Image 1 (cartoon, rainbow, N blue to C red):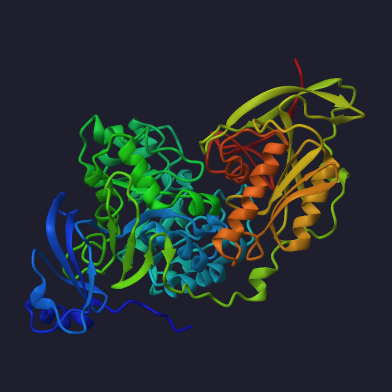
Image 2 (cartoon, one colour):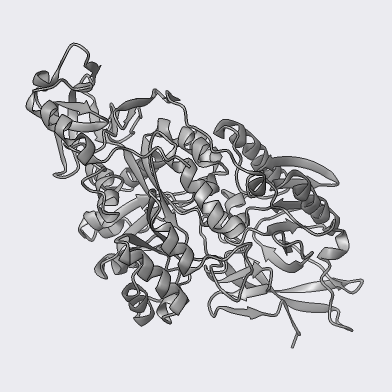
Length: 600
């Protein structure tokens, strides 16, 4: 398709030079503001920014020499002029929105650049799905760079995806105009063991001169971690404590600290800068996963920056971590991430550096939002039927598909149980003694059932297990086709009939999230594109998502952002215990384990 790419600097350099020198007038001047210079960490009052061809031509105390009769003047009136915010690692699909609607949601919050890894859709639709995301991303009025997904499946041999990504796919994608690098290398055992496929993907990326994203979800910071870094990943966002952040930057990685809808990993790591005094230029702020409700009601990267400041970070340092540090990491320091000549004219006006109200957003020299309202169109891709018909169960499910048969002659049994940890991606590997009723193992107390329903190849396969931590009560079930990373269908419930109702409902609507109680549907979020995203506006999706949250609470759940926990229960690359279409997986050893164990 025809891509709407931003003009290269070389194409507009003569005009930029002429405007800076005063030989030609600027298209726009942002006048009399406080220039936040992230290169020098200074706040310089009484400055103006001259813009031409969507780029910054001049910054200085007086831009009158750049002014002509047609120049648009925007009065900063003493407000701060900061660079547009950059999200260094994120998955658009986690917002339950397409790239166009995601952009429309975050632009008013000051996000003008995103580095996105569409590995969710890669698991469902393969390289074709990545191309669809990439193409819609390039249609937007802000900068959305795509990282080619690296790990589909994320753990070969432990899960089955709709499609697999190959080194040949990676090499092909590196030639696409919007590809910035390789997405997070989640198969960290593969890298540390020098798996030829993983190294071939990394090599294809490095030969193209692009950045390799990391994902090291292990507490082992010894030789295994050193081996991973030696394998090529240049950043990591899986750190959860100060020691993790320090280890990463000491080994030459960028430490990406995330604040998403369910991940609160900034406060525990930013002390490496605020207390230990490490060089902040090697730290980057990101979101990783933000659902639509967070975007609509709380913000995006502005929320992360505010949080970092509230955790004791100097506001100018926090801004560096969300602008120039990110741009530099991806080799784009001369292109974006600062308000300096030659860079894309991505500028935010705000009256307060700490609370960070986003009063005006300028992207590529165009006013794209003002006072929380978007001022531009975000064009949609024409998603084909192949992207809208992805839930294939093979046959309607019944309560019997969710039965867990007990060993003959037993009264109780010991089960391996997935333990949900609030606000964190890792789970706990728990054990519970459970009752047997009518030959079937039943949940008890806070332990309820979880099932992974195969939905890519219509095999009719259902893997059953147990999970604790949600606090569900009564006869209920919740199902979702967002099931990182293989994106089959996860069903959690206290009653097998409700589980069947929920699963069949998602097959009927083409994917999404549904909650049932006592035979009645309490909430439904339709996600017709790949079973992951909606092309409806964020506010509409957020409203349905809010009803989903309320329904979870009505069913007894009190966890913060419990939906994110639900959607990650099949993520077989983050310890300790997960479920896949192939069984129960102990991610500490990367081995399948039995669900039931005999009592001693």
